Length: 319
Image (tube, rainbow, N blue to C red; front, side, top):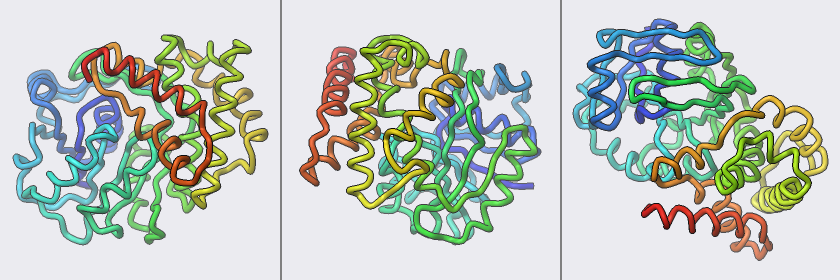
């Protein structure tokens, strides 16, 4: 039985926990106190495009801080916090009580680029792995997760060339819990593929308050998205990375032909955050393209404009 610590009991954390619980893993969740109280009182419910399922409170453990997690050895720790909290959580992990032996594997289940680099300040690189998730989760209630969309299998891998054999049990547990999952040597390509998906859609969908599918139906928004995608390719290649498409033209064919239709009704996480008055992950997505572009004297006006507009709205909400 795998012992898995899930750090962050938001939509992604609860969604992943539901699949691992179904497979029989021993799960400990760390989240904010109101969520922890709701889970402890009522258990965890999952609804949506996968099967509806209920896990009673006694089937998992919940804690409101990492310091409260017992002194025990976990096989995996899934980091499911927002990208802007990566450094804070890294410091908390460094100071926490649970055993952090060389065998524990930290799997970053986050949006954006740069999380692994930040996390490596606190945890050795050989213990850091990454997940690419293209499954949509929302939390209609604190103890309920709704799976709204599922486009591709969950991918697990290492950005640091580490041995991937140790990830196999986690991938198998996800599969046994009902969500397709594979271990891959190409996780950097997968993460950049997700950047290519998020950069044109997430912030623009939030700014216009529309679903992803509508963005692809209008000529004006398509022009904006294509500018953003071209800029992402330029910066990605300048940083020395690649993805599953050689150029923006071939990517956009799949983007409009396959990716957008499969997530037509999905609303972006940034839109959900703005509605809730929360901070968004704009800096880990379009903000990365702006920052890395500036370092290399690459003009990225599309990403810069989107980032600035989103920051304006975020500022109005007080975040």
